[in-house]
Structure formats: structure tokens, C-alpha cells
Image 1 (cartoon, rainbow, N blue to C red):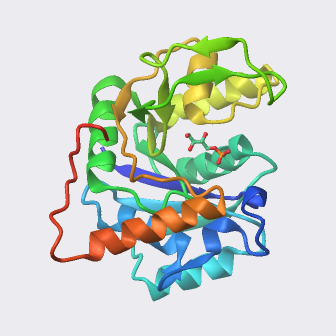
Image 2 (tube, rainbow, N blue to C red):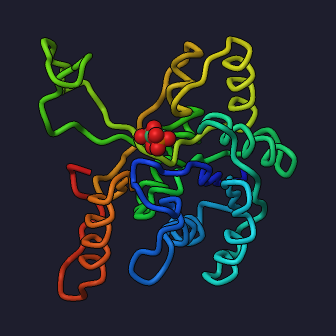
Image 3 (tube, rainbow, N blue to C red):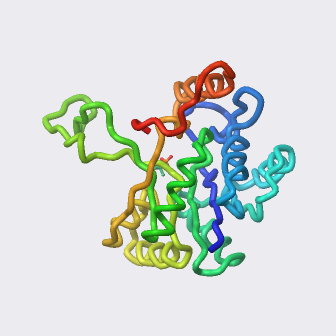
Length: 244
Ligand SMILES: C[C@](O)(CO)[C@H](O)COP(=O)(O)O
């Protein structure tokens, strides 16, 4: 079975408050999306990469791919108005190039620090069960708030999971579920939500605290710190921390 990664880089990243979209921000010596593409390029489990990006940025993505040796890039397409529509565009392109039983890994461009074991476990679980979503436990007590300033409800922490990407699916299943939610007029926030909305079970794989999603400027600081820690030759790196 072949595996294709769809990197979603179609968002504007308004919460970052920068002129450049967050996935294109230069961090240390390269743009965020270059780190993301490199992680998937490096994985022996990934055969091909498709990038879904903001209209007009296609040539920039191709230039970065050339610059950073992303030889697995097989296609770039335009994003949609929502994350769901962007994933649909990427899925359509994947379906033009690969057979229906292809394993698809949908990954956020804004997660540039993707550990190899997270890819491996996502592929393992999706191959075994038909889908996968990397998750991490919730360390904090969770309060639900309707108005943003008060709360009267605690969410059970032990069963709450924080979801990440890459989320794995069989290409034909992904297309079927997208058709179903479109027909029902629903816009899921993430593919794992779509699966649940379609009445199916999502299978959990191992995520990592290091698989950070760049959302605010604080996340850039954390990513920089992670890069420095990973580059420190005198520190032993753990890739399988039990908390991850
Ligand atoms: C897919 C995701 O990363 C799972 O945690 C998350 O839902 C993406 O959210 P975004 O608002 O589209 O960045």
C-alpha cells in the first residue's frame, strides 16, 4: 500500500498576528513549512507529499521544496475557505494520482516539529484499523466556559484527549465521508471530527507534546527552544517519553 501525506497550508493564521501566514514564517534558518515537509520527506513510510496552500503561494511552496530537497512532492493545490474544504481539495488531487486503497496522512503545515515515531504510529494504527489520530493526554484540569469568563462545569480529564496530526485514512473512506458531510451541510473542524460525525470510531495513535501546533507567537518561542534542545549534542534526546 502506498502512503501519501497531504500537508494543509491553506490557512492565514490570523491568531499569530503577522503579515506572513504562520506556515511561511522564517524560524531560525528556514520557513516553518520547510521543517514540516522535511519530517515527511525523511520518513521511509511516506511515498509522496501533496501540499494544499493559499492561492498564489504555489510557486513559493515549490521553490522551498526545491531548496530543501523535498523530492517526494508530487502536487500542490489551492486551499478552500475552510480547513475541511482544503483537505477535500488535497484529497481530490490524491485521488487523481493514487489508487483508492492508498493510505492518506493529513498533516497541518503548522506542525513543523513532527517526530518520526508519531508518523510511524499513525501509519501503524491506520493500517491496522482503517484510521488513526495521534493524541496526547491532558495535563491540566479542564473547565467548560460558555462566556469565556465564568465556568460551572468540569470536563473529565482522564478521558479527554488532545488531538494532533498526521491523521491517517484510506483514500476511498476519506472521499466517502467527505461526500456524506457535504451532503449533510456539515463542516468538521478536523478529519477526526468528520469520522465521529459519520458515526464511525476513530482509532488513537501516539502523539507528542513536541508535535507543537504554531498558533500564537508563544508557540514560535517553544518551537525555537525545541530546535535548540534537539540540536544540543550533549543532551540525550528521548523520542519515546511516556507523556508523549
Ligand atoms: C487538526 C488539528 O491539528 C487537530 O488538533 C486541529 O484541529 C487543527 O486546527 P486548526 O484550527 O485548523 O489549526
